[in-house]
Image 1 (cartoon, rainbow, N blue to C red):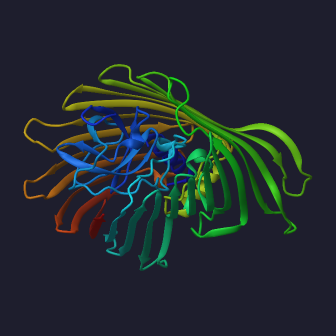
Image 2 (cartoon, one colour; image 1 turned 90 degrees about the vertical axis):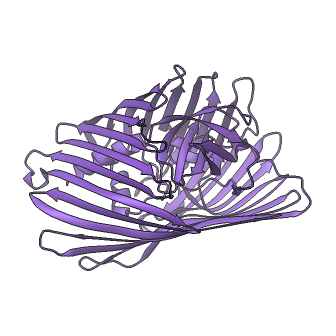
Image 3 (cartoon, rainbow, N blue to C red; image 1 turned 180 degrees about the horizontal axis):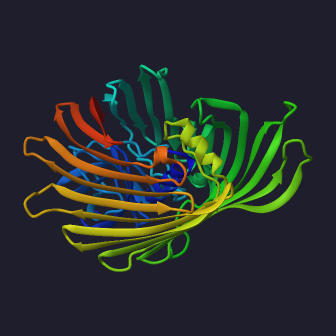
Length: 531
């Protein structure tokens, strides 16, 4: 499809992404097959351990000061949808509570510094809990010559916690592995994008493993140790290595150390959180000599400026660089800037705007290392994103947005527009119809992507959806990728005790050829709580 389309797709996807009894407004900023990521315009999100949405209690599996990650269950919602839910700070007995360890899939939607120290229960007796999901799925498709493409995938998510008085120990592991068969084939390779052990008491927190420091979230992932000490302010020490985004292993040639200070609670009436610190990176010169090649100052701020307006920003200044083959230099360059505003313009409308001028951040939740290499190849990205979401009625939500960006490695700007609609028909209690479309272009290419999907749940517990997608690519001088593609299919999933089984049948048409495919799999969910 060509690098311009991949670049455009990456940038478009990057842009897409309390008290009990009171309704809380939120926006779905991102989702996976298992979780919703909710941006909550309320600073006490850390106090919420479950939410009541569409007649179901959904456990909160992670939280920062202004975002929640909740278990998806059988609910179908689209990215960007605004919603209201009832929170609970005391989880019902039917909803096991999971240790609130922020997963490694930290994206821009989870940008809050997270400097609030979680409250440690004062109970004397031992409490323990664990939750997990193990999944396996298999996909097969056939081309026009009936040659099969076979792929299997394994998925693992596990969290466990033990509480004894003022002491708490959490273990969390999340990862994905894939393997391709036939020609081309590949070895089974795991991408463990989170693997942490966290010990916490009234004095502070010790965290070991692959993590994203919440007080410096836009620096990306770290393989190492993070120590947080509770003083009048929170003092953080981090040391370790930057992960290898190609092998998903530990890269011992890229050391990192840092010291940060963050606020333990909101300062003033605006409910603001902030952190500031310095970090140094080490590497190998072209002669194989190890030494510091970068030192930076980092600052991030999150604040509720009013009940309707929230702000987030992060900045990086390089203070030292050591280019290959040159002498080190002391500098003061603003090398990273991000700022966003989230405004609740009315009871039904929400407006979001952001500006960034920085290099891409890799959080290792993706699998394709070639895609991540392309992200690095984009260089420094500069641009803005605007989005507006409006609840026309209790059953209809519409949203639209624009994105404009350019990168230092390609001065040709990239622009896109998007539109989405989510409607709950009168004839169903849990069904939803969603419609999404986007158009992207610059002087070298153009793309149009559209999708319509209907999802519903049968009274027997069977969850099903049907969909159709249209993709159009146009690249001058590259006829091989100038094609219209149609995808359509149906998927059903059925829980049976701790098992969840799903089957998806899909067909696609491109270049006047028919490509059938089948996708099936099983998930096993386990949970236990003792006290």
